[in-house]
Length: 325
Image (cartoon, rainbow, N blue to C red):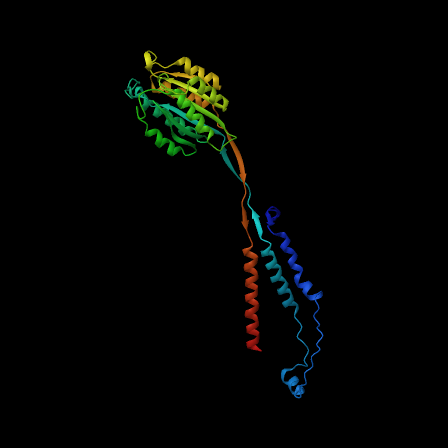
């Protein structure tokens, strides 16, 4: 009971001073007025008898005074706006913003992954599992080929993100690979969020080397480091590839080192790719902050309704007394 009362407060406590208003009107305001006008009434004795003006004024009963003060106190209490402060409810706020940077160039259509699926299909399967396990992160998506595009904003809406992952197809924005531009877009996407106290992480996956960037990958990596964005890289594809189809492992390692991340290499199997995502998940533990929220529930309606009910009872009681008199 004491805890319940401790959570009740008044939004306008100064309104409680009005409780003394009837006393001021009774004891401090002059009630006797000097009357200088005189009227001669020849039939005054008959008028006194008829109107019973010589009878003693009826004194207010103690019960009526008590009811008056009770109604007045309830009205003043309602005017003071009592509120109930609810117990705090703790909400888990994500403390990491993460952007997936996925290669959708033409080479991702190769079906050289074990099981007869394309490289992009294997990536989609692994990424879906990773996203499903990161329930408390805000995750966005950047795709790149000849150009780089933000494909999903950084948010907690995992269902919308999974839908965007399902919509990926090889060569949807060109055939080449713009790694540096993709990293620059990811940094910009992370900077556009309003969560200034959250850590920033990007995961870059590609199966080739940079062939189309306007922003040099090394410069993009330094830009990420300057904006406190850690980048993990995943080199995926056939290690025996040559030319533009061969992953630039040195570049991927350099990007990870500049930004404080780690570089992984995944062979042409879904299991190998899954193990990489699991390793990244293991070294990036959940970061959340617990926030307590309380709400102010208004209570003014209860004393107001009680005062109204008492006034109705007084009115009904007076009508009954007048009829039975």
